[in-house]
Length: 455
Image (tube, rainbow, N blue to C red; front, side, top):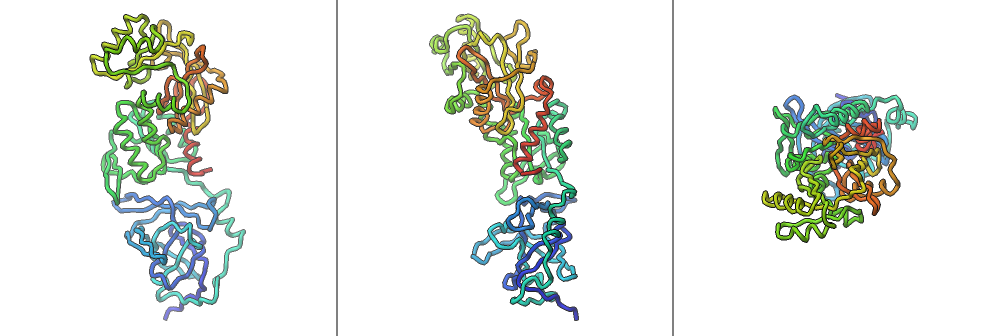
């Protein structure tokens, strides 16, 4: 007959299959099932089988010791806690080592932050192998503090990177290549996810994002949406789906959506105390005359609401030209803004790059000869510029008002002081990295690391 391991009401055990060298468990013969503390729980498919990955802080009240685990999914079960709370939990199988013996047990995964123990050992796991002496604790001994440090705080222990997806359309674009490169250099697993190859399953219990060929994308830690304007609707729908799966989006879908609506974003910025050039918006060509007067007369700028990278922006130098352009756009049922022309800016504007509430780089863009738009895509040139504290403050305030972690903020210097032109949620890196020699892609990856407290 097999000799049983004698244990107390609390014991230290190890779960070698999922890489946990030691963990304190509450031995509870009153509970049928064993439970293990787990956070960031996500399911994914591996070799046509369902797996689950999760993180665990094996030491109570210590968030620094963190282990990334994964295991094959065995079942999903409704478990009723001692307080009567019913919860749907994932079930895995893992080996447990206790008193020199090792055997396979089933455990459910749940957040046990409010409990006194990271693990609960139930009677099913102990049946035929364990005898409990409830008067005693740690019959099998306890690890020393030095041992715990060796297990969980070793400086040399290999650090596993995050799994980050870049959600975009063109893998050959400079900005996209740089972001992938910066993430890999910092030790992360980077994946280019082409928007057009993604599709999703909307389901209350098992929402999913699939990729060309049927691959499931649920197991990402973070995504970086770089959505071109023509793909805004679908790109934001995908980003929302990732967010529903508890995947961190560097810029969230709601922020991208509002930043793409030029009129709404200007209203948001004004409500947050950010100055812009005087702007008019109207629906009917009958209002053209007053609309032109409202922004200070000609010359003025006419902007298509859906325009980007300087496209759909026209300088009307006379009142007659302004009327013609406005009426032409209106006859196409296009939504337009009219804006005062800041002559003293002399075809120059500033692009301030904000990442996680800080201005990480700034450049001055100057329009090509005979052109008034300073966009690099329109032939403008970039140079390093020293921005003022006020300009930095405006850029940070604008990114915050739009709820963007990453933003390209365009500012123009006028006789009234700095004015905000636009906030871009997918700013290009080529011009600004080239002009400033700064690793902006690296700053974007650092913002993701900061969210995960990854160091």
